[in-house]
Length: 456
Image 1: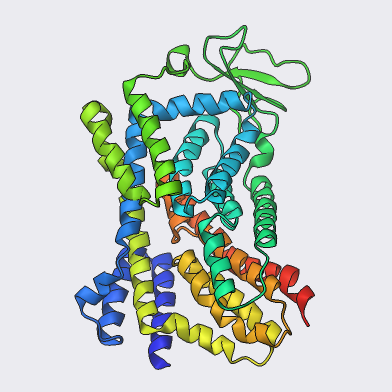
Image 2: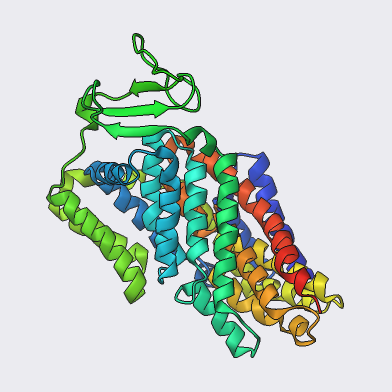
């Protein structure tokens, strides 16, 4: 037990030291992995590096590299114009479009990091253009991935339903999907109004509006200069009813871009990434690098400076922490926590603690792995019928997935990596607070909603 307490204490120290000093959390986590692994777990360097998330490294670097090129060659600009036209310029709907697209991708089988990796960079491009909070956009993309993640055809849903079936537990795949979707919609509504969505309502974007330059026009309800919209230039008269029309970009920089060879290839590459993740289970990072190489061969100028814009600090941070958590998993600390909960006499309290463990661990590690490991630990509580099996499985599944917004989880890391560079520290900090809050709030909420009513 002493070894497990040392590992848990080291994890607490990592967050404490990095919070109150300038030491990089990822570097500190690698040092802790080396120290705890060699002195407590008896591991050598090869063992420690065995837990380095090479697949996550490739995903983070590959996706940010690809979208840096897509921004250079104008593909992101083209996508923004297309999406704005699709919602008829209603800026308030853009984050919800990103939510629904991401949910649709995961619902039909895309793995959550793959869907977030494709959609998050596009969503972040809208944030820069239309002054949408990157935190708001990132949370709706992540929640959208979780919302679709438990459909019977999805990866999370298949894992959860498979574990339930193998353990001869009663299950309800349709109810699991519905409850997960509704919980994430409710969570997104809260995030939308908490992080600036209210200021987007009434704002519109249109290309080439009559009476203005052939550029982009922003309309905002309320007086000019409020609600996140820029103030009207001198000489611009507000419309009746307090609505201002603001020309905020010259025509030369805001004309809808045309599709050229480089942009068409980029779009085909993005579609190929989605298809590969959905139907062939290809690694999204390796596919991203493949597209990068092809695009560089076609248009070398578009690749200039793209490597420098890869989010290296975020990559180091996430990979360092995940490497340390890997040491904890090999030491058996995660299993020890689950076994300790399984010995609790009160089924309701034990169910709550299992949901809490699932949420906290999933915030730092693989949600996929947590779902497969913790549901069997709940079997002792479910056998005596004092806790409803379907309710606990839903609570555990939702609790373990909504914390993917943590920047130390793959989805949160992808959002942080693709946020505007000058805002990445703020986005990281805000996602950390939100993710850790979800690690406490989601288990309590799902336990109260799904477990307590089913008590025998």
